Image (cartoon, rainbow, N blue to C red; front, side):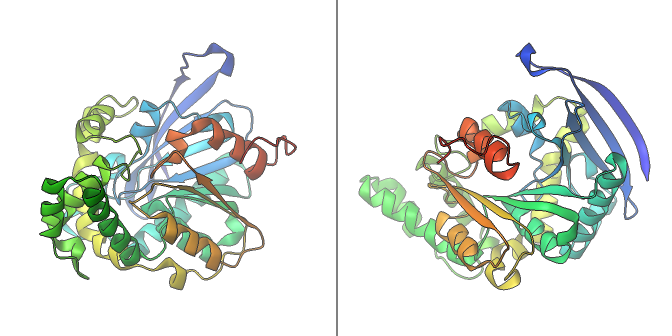
Length: 340
């Protein structure tokens, strides 16, 4: 059920792109008021639903800060998942989120978009945590989607984390960074690593420092804060609720993300599958993404390696990302031979 809707022009520094609109909506999804932002050039393009990562960290502010223009290819919906950003409600945060709630919410959002735009199917794009949610939803409801697109694809979370720990330790040794080595070696890596806040802080610090974090060149907490607080189309309270929602969502779902193995949970997807992975990704490692890709049974599948990226190849190598979306995913200008 649509509760509120606001529309305004989509502004570009490059006037050649064309006129567009931004629609911000609040929709009742399974009894909870949830926020959507839909960007369109009003040319009847295919629908895409972007499932953000975190859990609980909406992609829209970061995408706007990096001028990613998915609306050139799709009518694209950025949905703030239950419990964060536009969809955060303090009264609801007293009770933990569940995966089943988010799966059902995703299906309801998809159906809302299909009805609004009179399209039978949408493209489903998941990033990081969004690949967990997206893989499950696509496996349960393949008929709703043209294709599944995974970026920063999760495989076995625990095996990924082992690789990350070994990466930061090995790099500190190779760099003769004795101070870092000492800090890393003090950590005990075990099955409950996700509960250890000291481990999380050290891991985040050195994956970022050594090029395996959110972006290969580094992405500081200050830059994150600046991009969120400067985000267009959010109220100040909604910006603050991104950080509240990130904490709440991790408290609810951190154990799920840390212990999952999508290779076992999702052995097949009955739709085309496209995996985009940064070579230097140590948030969700390249090895585990490849393991997921190789194990998945699908009518069509393809994986793309981004050699200059970490966890966000769609931000770090935008032009190549655009070419693959246009030529491979959408099948426009298929004869373009300069993709790989």
